[in-house]
Image (cartoon, rainbow, N blue to C red):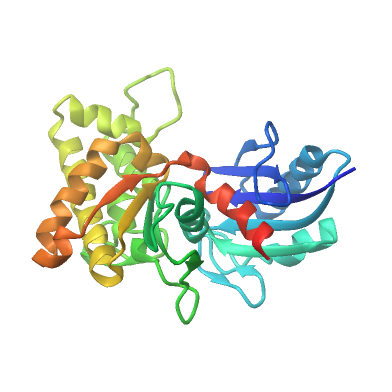
Length: 305
């Protein structure tokens, strides 16, 4: 029997659970992907059973758990999961009781930023910015391998920066923030409002991919939604570049990695929203660790403390 670490990445549509070695390396074949359960109690139940099964006879000595913010780090509580309308969720105490071990909680974008800065696309750079475009939009900053969380742990919540107070409603309750225009769930919401019936009549699953398919077919309404999202992300990238001045902005998240041309266009447009000196230093790369950046960050978090 060996000592191992648990790693958990809670997302709006998917939960990733895995086991890592004591140095933070995910164990081959241990990662499970589960559709996010509809209630907090079901979430805790499926995480607990999946992690226990993945560990087998090994002993879990510490768990790294990451989730969308905002988070109360002192009490180990996820204050609100905007995209699931949950909160507060005392995830640390629940997992600690289930596994009798230390549990560390971090924002998912910040965890992904750490992973990409240490062993991903940002490796070798001192100042790394990270932007995720997935179900939501978030960011993280890592300087010399250390995540910069700000005075209240909310640094990087650029997805909820309001651009147009008359814009679409975001799950956070505000209108017209970056996420309401460019987050995956918001894109799907706009998609369904305009086109109640899917392109593929045999599929009940709607995703941002369908929106981009419609745009590629020249649908004017799809082009408007796509381009509004591109403009919102451009302003997001401009804000990250202007405020943080990173050597590189690593871009990850399922929507971004599935629509790299859209991201490239957004970054190029962002240059128009920056002064010349900032624009010249604005460089981006896509996440080397793919959609597992946050999960790997959770494992590294557990291994480092």
